[in-house]
Image (tube, rainbow, N blue to C red; front, side, top):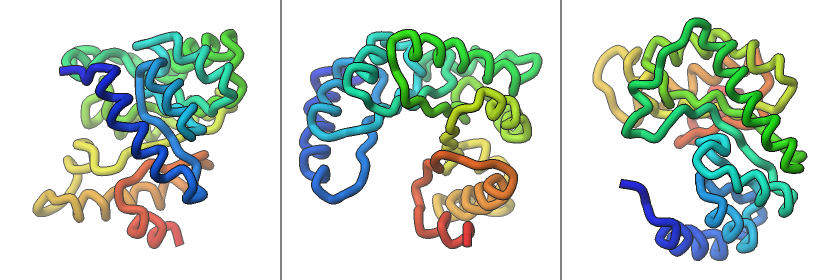
Amino acid sequence: MRVPIELEIARVIPVIQAIKNLGAEISIDTMNAETAEAAVAAGATIINDVSGGRNDPRIFEVAAKTSSTLIISHWRGHSTEMDQLNQYQSIGAEVANELLVQVNLAKAAGVTKIVIDPGLGFAKDVEQNWQLLDELGELEKLGLPILIGPSRKRFIAARIEGEDSLEARDEATAELLAELTKKHSFWGLRVHNVRTTVARQN
């Protein structure tokens, strides 16, 4: 069930107001333009839309008029339908091309600060996620900063030897990101366990 916009706003705004003076940049994770606008007014500077503007295209206008950074993720549909939307012939190229469509819409609306996200776990099965990681070069051809978020996802768990646990997923995530950052330059890494991830980076 989708969270009503009014409830989404009521949940996130007090949190943003409570932490905005701590010195960190705040990102609002929402697919709704109304929530994004309220969050930016409260102190957020990054809008992270996992739908890449497909759920509510007005989010492009919000990002443009507030000069916010907009993270555009690859997305084909809501969680209730995305598992039926995972048909690809060449996943790296297709994800890049579909992202480019949304990037161009954002630019047309006046958005100047754009980050792309391959959308790991969204409309992709286990092997497709691993294949996409092997083909990140296709996304790099777009010439935009890249955010990646494999943390604790099912495709990570699928390759864990032994018992699956949050700790095991954190270790596997950190190991994966340590390898990926040797090959690629990322704008950001979205993780649950920062300490473990940073330790592996060093």
